[in-house]
Image (cartoon, rainbow, N blue to C red; front, side):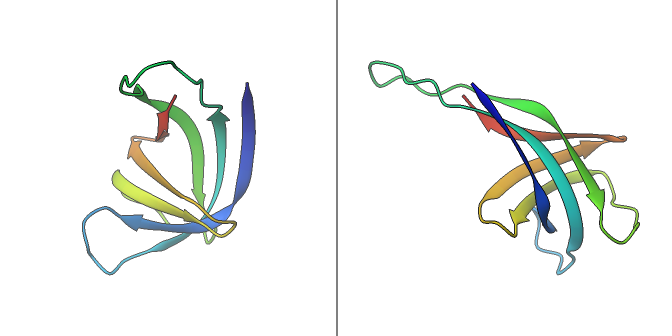
Length: 88
């Protein structure tokens, strides 16, 4: 099962730079599948959308997305494609 989450927040580089960007985002969340035992949950990069709320250019790189509605997501940009780290 999956959910769509849209909203706004602030994008902060993973390295401390003092820079942050106001953004609007859309993430297609994957619901966690329960497994028996103690296995490690697999993680993978899934596509998402992130765009500047003020039409500023956001450099490629790794970021933390702090959603205004709560929650923090790890995201990265390569070219014009955005991905978030999804744990299934």
